[in-house]
Image 1 (tube, rainbow, N blue to C red):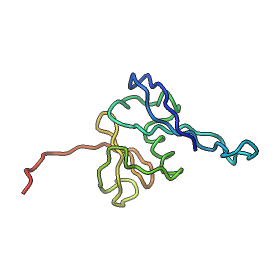
Image 2: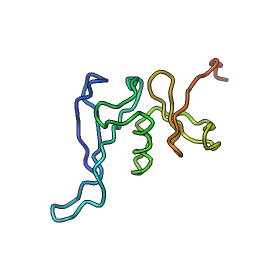
Image 3: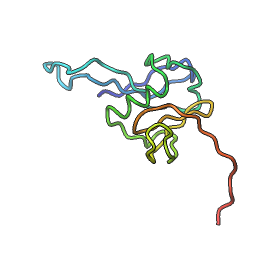
Image 4: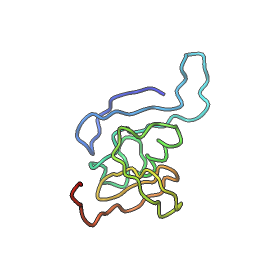
Length: 118
């Protein structure tokens, strides 16, 4: 995988991306098609399609999962996934949406209130 900075029209700034499936050396044949993975999925992802990777935000999360990319740079919460019924890290992105880090299913994220710390 190769790291790059690319201009994102949705965020109106440069974002970090990975390009998968690229050979490490010139004489290696790639094993699969290249995919672009945005490493800055977040509140600016309000559309149905990423302008860089031509994928929905939850599809972009599925690419992260499939390629074993750590989720530590993304906004996540631990919650019960409504699709796979497992407690998982949910990757949060625009307009109260989230994607399961296990199955990649899209869900709505909402919270009722915030309680003071003890």
